[in-house]
Image 1 (cartoon, rainbow, N blue to C red):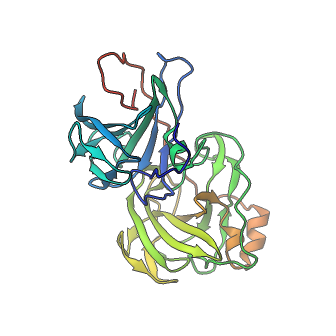
Image 2 (tube, rainbow, N blue to C red):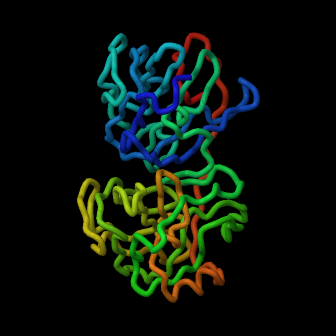
Length: 333
């Protein structure tokens, strides 16, 4: 496999990541078994899809009604679907070069859109996130998220005194970050953010200045908005705000700290109006509370009061195995 981060980029979203992984790499035990032979990255229909690395296009056409692009990188091939290609067979492409636009039809994440990105070395499927330094993925950044029931990795180092502001007035955490038994599904899994009490229609404010990088319907997360804050106290940070009832800003828009960016709601898989607030520090989902100002909320958080509203990711999509002879090497098999 090419060295990690050796000129490779994410095919959707910010080229340097982090990506919003909806469904992670989950290869089958046997070649003929069902599994998820790639990763699904959240994006909006019509979004630009880029070549993850330099290579030659070997396939660019529909398969079973979905547009597929396959790029040969030497000992490795990567695949992208569902995509409307803007390249053709034989074209040489560089890392980050546009190869098509994301289609909505045929997405693993219907009714939301996402890109299925696959990678193969010879006849063996491999995790494409390893190409960009993602490695084994256990947490889902920015989209429907937790892949396993394992405890979260050690949190990223937080600053000594905050760095962000609470996105609601009079914050009260009703369900903290961490492992818990989901009250709706009964699964033991990571709660990848904090649920903050908020009345329906209450204003949701940006925790820091930045730029909106995504705003749309995101499955179990409902209406979700994501803001890139650049570096805050030395660490690259982004925040996301889920279950909104409405957006007050749009993707690509610069925003100031404290600006109203949306309204609280109960969209997606939710039991009542509240805000699900997530933080990504250096590309990894982490507990946002240590980054926020200390307040009366602390006693509520530490006491782990009854969890008033929750959500769950949608089940991981799995596909059945198909014969590979005489077919292009796509990751979705």
